[in-house]
Amino acid sequence: MPTLSPTHLAAIERRRRLIVNFDVTFAINVQHRRNPDRPDLVEHLFEFADAPGSQIDSIWWNWGEGNQAPYPSEHLPLYDHPLYQKWADEGTDIVGQVLTATQRRGLECFFSHRMNGSDNDLGPFARIPAKVAHPDWLFRTPWCTHEDNGYWNFALPQVHDYVLRNLREVIERWPFDGMELDFARGVVFPAGQGWSNRERLTEFIAQLRELSLAVGERRGRPFLLAARIPETLVGCRFDGIDVERWVGEQLIDLLALGVRSFEVNLADFQRVVAGTPVKLYPSIDDHHATDGYQNPGIEVLRGVAANWWHQDTDGIHTFNFNYATDAPYAGQDWASHLRAYQELGEVATLNAKDKCFVVQRRGGGHGPTVIPNPEDWATPRHSYANTNMLAQLPAAVPNDEHTDLLLQIHVGLDLAAERISAAELRLLLSDPSAENLPEAQRLPPVQVATIGHPDGELVNIPATQGVEQTVQIRLNNALLEQPTADDGWLVWPVEGPLLATGANLVGISAQKRAPDAPQLVVEKLEIAVVCKAAD
Image (cartoon, rainbow, N blue to C red):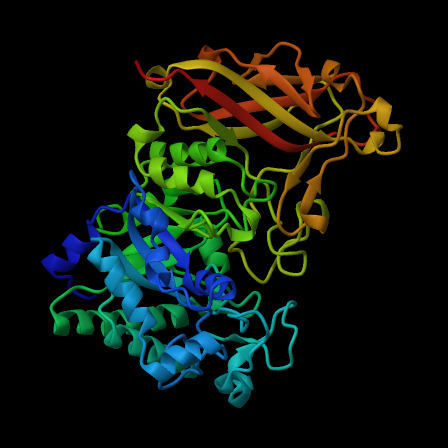
């Protein structure tokens, strides 16, 4: 087990209210298409980090999928792109420039490595010489679309040596504060072989730890290791990640939990890291987003952050957020993301602001070949990460008025301090029995932008008009009054005393419904809270 120096331990303790995992090659490519000769390109990358009130303390720059390089490498092919070729020819060190600009601002700076990224950093498929030469080092998944395309099999020592060689080049060339190993952007073992090969992955992590500690000691500054892993311990086991051993043997310093998950099992991870210096940072992605909640608005983002702070997180990790006002990521609302960077990093800046708490939906996010959509669900046995496969929704309501569908929703509020002025519970249903009814006899459909669904839309099956008279809600076993129908949703007012800080139990029942009728399906469950401004 390595011994961590006092300076290394102090670096782990550094404040990280918000960590930004920054897909920097995407940003550079966008700007190059708009203005190939933009002189302030590097400074432009920091627009949100430089904004007044920014709570960004750490930026983890992702320079691609890990199979090509944006710099002249001894081992990896240079990006086949005129901008990167120009920089290479003229000796421009773009990675070093971004690193220097980050540290000049007093921000922590990591290199983020995608452990098994795809081969399309810049859009089209790229042939990777090492993969062409060593097809026996690879395995394939259902979405591998090219004969040379495949993923490195981390059960093999040859793969360890190859990847370690590439990472050594980064660690020794630039004075990064650390490196993130991103296990959320690809799989590292063939389906079903993860947990049985966990020792092999731990061996790789131990070798990288030995290397990074040696480099840190040689340069007189610690080099930290972080990993982005699934949001539950069982998910880590599904994917072959023995996080308990990594923590117990001091192989890792920081853990980013999940990627597109609103619900993160912080309590289990807190038990794992208890008595160690390891810090925890749940992660939120707003591009490959939680199903049905792509670009959901600041109220939902506040609710997610409030829940995590209530569960004693050490900070929050973001992924695929906007970085500037003139560079919306896939049509996202840059204003919400700018506000998120000014609010989500501290409880004090979240207090007295309106919030929306939601129940997680499973699946979706990458198209059905990679992760099934919830309405066409099948267990994605190739990987747990990104799937939200343990999420509670969608879920069917029993056709039995004496049996409730029971769901838990977390409300991370200090109910006294927040001074709630109004709250409502919102329910979005699908009703297969009403699918063929005339439009006038049904509630209006609800469309929510979401990646991975046909035409980018999740559309419910609207229930019959008058369904609000047959659906009952019990909040912490208190029966709520009859709801109203509001633009396709059923809405119940909630008295403040009925809410609990933390987990709330919601019972949903269908009254006077024929036992053999198709069941109502809960697509979404939300609790929206309006807070009074502080005096």
